[in-house]
Length: 110
Length: 117
Image (cartoon, rainbow over all chains, first blue to last red; front, side, top):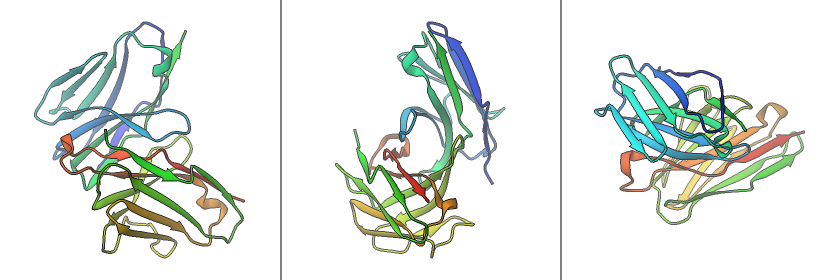
């Protein structure tokens, strides 16, 4: 089945950039997403990228997609303490089934 | 944006009792809703796809008699954990896909934390 992998933990200083990486195995993925989960809460969609795109920028967020290597990254510019959370990448070939990564816990040090 | 709610937000119950969790789409109709389970420090695992007016589709390894799903209306799906046991303690999250949403995105409820004693 589909597999989505992420590093478990990332620590950055406030004001620095954060880069969270993700690899996936399903070459038929149509959309790739980044979700944010704060403690005890549900998931909040941050951004997504269509599989035929290489990059998408949305304010402080930049998503890079290397479809050949099946590698997805999320860059958060000027990271703030409020960005501390768990970030999940996810892939879907259609909304009927979304596969989530293992999640990366981002810790922002003041 | 689309809003999905869940009720209750947390529940504690005794072993052997049944617990019902509701998932509602507040400002859109959803013919399909999804139920996920998340263990501490782990990712979300899809349990089942809830289809309005028909039977739910369960993922491999999920007991349909244990986790009863009812999607009786276009805005409400319920998950009932029957005869709950401590190993059922988890964070249950539902999601729905609003018709016409960009990139076929799903919107998630805030989750229900279940603790079975």
